[in-house]
Image (cartoon, rainbow, N blue to C red; front, side):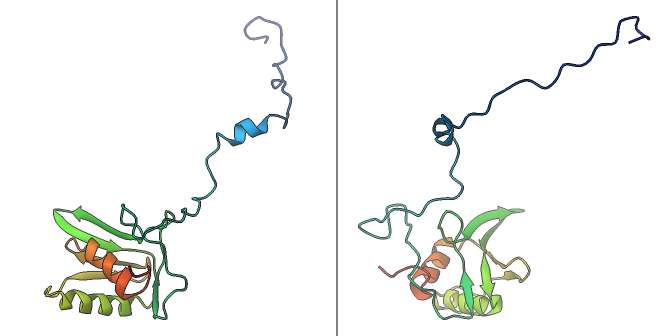
Length: 149
């Protein structure tokens, strides 16, 4: 304070407040859930959006495809530098066996050899072209990751 000619003042302390848990129920309603809840049961599968729940127990295969946090199969379509791509993520186990099986399935549909990129570190398989519906059908019906309808 001597430089500016005023008297030294003590800074104000922290604001005073009082903690109360009596009305915390009103605050809890505003907080988002900590995780996505389990989907409710439906009378018929697949639902109108095309979603089906996972099978009761995972199939006995050398690989496993985990669902996303929203309970969907992790099959994504997109474009990169003008090329259409299909990505299959969250693969655990022998990713090369999944690649061989998927290549054989696409070959049975009359599709010529589809260029693919396998990333063992991230558990991702990328295919050239948009093959999302075919891959989802193959994962669901042929591989047993969703119940057959």
